[in-house]
Amino acid sequence: MLSRLLPLMLALLLALPAHAITVIRDAEIERSLKEIAKPVLRAAGLGTNSVRILVIQDNSLNAFVVDSRHIFVHSGLIMRLKRPEALQAVLAHEIAHIANGHLVRRAGNARTASRVAAIGLALSVAAAAKGESEAAIGIAAGSAGSAQRVFFAHTRAEEASADQSALRYMASAGIDPAAMNDILDLFRGQEALRSNRQDPYARTHPLTADRLRAVRGYVAGLKARTRPASAETVYWYNRMEAKLQGFLQNSKTVLRRPEAKGNGETAVLRRAVAYHRRPAAAKALKEMNTLLKLRPRDPYYHELRGQILLESRNTAAAVQSYRNAVNLARGEPLILAGLGKALLAANTKASNAEALRVLNTARGRDPGDPVMLRNLALAHAKNGQNAMASVATAERYLVIGRFNEAELHSKRALGALPRGSQGWLRAQDVLSTAKAAPKKRRR
View (cartoon, rainbow, N blue to C red):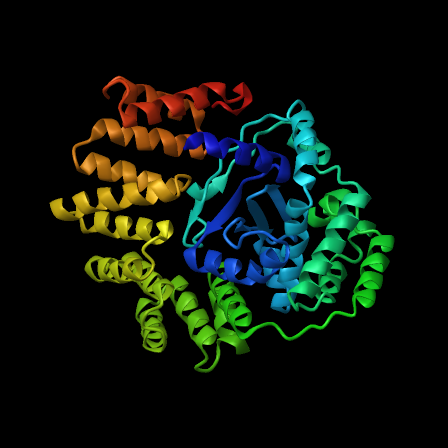
């Protein structure tokens, strides 16, 4: 399981600037991105479940692919866009790199780049858009910047190809291809800045005057029959925008904005999140009750209510809200992980035993969440399984890039578990990976 993370770790190391970042993990936001991307993926001939789109908490303007299954978009870019079609244009360009096979050529660049970079990145994920410090991705010190320049040595032909394919996908899906101009206009003037002041997108996606003219000319030549974004696309886009703004921006500012006024669903959602962050739990829960009256079977609203209750120390009610969410979205590992955390907070023999079962299921579906792994280790310990607690702790340290601690806990687990057992094999995987980590990453 852990070995599947390694290509993603390498690609992220090469793709990101040398500072800690946060990958926002939130079931509702990921569902929103999936819904927004669906028509583009279909037009590109890719399965709607074939690509995972994640948000990086970063105010800069960037989006990139790391392999054929993952697209990353910075929150700053999403919140600068004015309409869902513009976000679909961003995604269409990145999907085009996947569909056109550009990643095959980049694999050669990655191998070259790996010789000039310290390969030591730990993929980590944040719980429910909270931006916890534990959820930072650590980038190895050294020559990561040089690696980035090598890895993203895009040719103009490749970028032009991605632009043209993206515009075709959009036209085929009935999405206004002129929305691509919204993106290019955002980056107008970036090339006039010194490289250390440019947003990453401008460095990784060359924005020459020729490219701007080519895109506009191609859009004009398409003569595409477009229609306004579907009501479903607009709906999920607005939910995602409301939640990102509520969690990432100043709560007082969010509450003063016109978008947070009135009884519209996304206005209520903005207020619920903003009140939660103040914190004003009673007001937040009042808004959540309004949302649940509107959509009583929405798993993400039950999950958010559970988060608010749990962080307000109303554990019993939080467990029930998370149960409701799980029952409505049984396959969602992030919601399962939330239920497991709430059950641990209840801290009874029965709840701790159930937490262990729930968190093991969550781990089987999404093994890269350090918050879940921390809680899984705690659940093992509370159930008297100290050796398995060491396994989960070792996995967590590996994911957040603390290789010495990962090696220590994996050795502790190996010494206590039956050779060849599932836990023993997991600990062995951690030990092998930790030992192979670059010395520069060790602390």
